[in-house]
Image 1 (cartoon, rainbow over the protein chains, first blue to last red):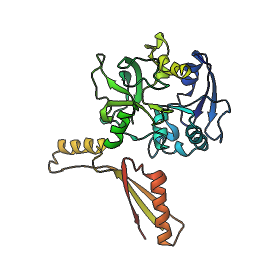
Image 2 (tube, chains in turn yellow, green):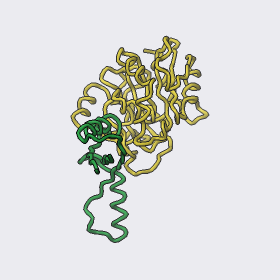
Image 3 (tube, helix red, strand yellow):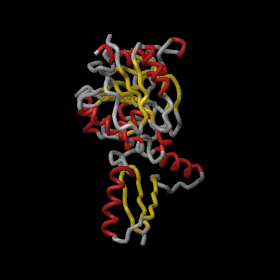
Image 4 (cartoon, rainbow over the protein chains, first blue to last red):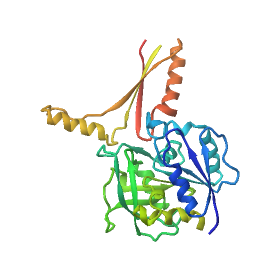
Length: 227
Length: 80
């Protein structure tokens, strides 16, 4: 496994950055927190993580204002050159607002803030993120969000299915599809066409060790060092 | 000049807030409501007298930040 330099972004209102630092340090990687006013990323960056939280208080729409922070220009250029970017929860929302990922995240269908452990089915493993998982494997990872209702038009969605861009779906313990927040086709995580930008609503950084209730998150994050 | 931008979810995109309010109206006995859609109204006070120029800028504001055109539509009114 190679040692990664992970750059973790920090916006006003981000609150999962230290959990994310902890998670990647635990896996033996180096981490740097990058304030959103920065105009460039650390030179040696192997992976950019946009962590969870409530950037700009979720005003207007979740992620809509953070997307215009100076650092996002650098992230866009980095992703454009094939650099890897992972958005978790609010980070996923920011990446869709920045058009680095297709679709958009709406208010949960039941209008509740949902916070609980949730089973997920691994849909596609042919990517850097989930290459240590088995296809159809069932993972158990916490979710905590009010705006996780993923929407994209049917045509784009069919294309995404074909390209292996659907990464994770909500399911029950037996793997049956489960409606959690109203997401189209129960989608919990996706990637872009080029497979270098990843986004998911669940929080792998909160499932890094047995004492937290699950270690399934480490399997996901470790994938980046494996491939 | 004053401008109002209304942002709402596109036709065909499920509006969970509208649904909840529709249900609540039904429980209150208002049974003749067929559908409820909830949007956002953004009121802007512009330092601008040229209507056409203002309209162009407002459109740009809506497209870049105020509406997410993947899921939302918008309309613009200039009030005076």
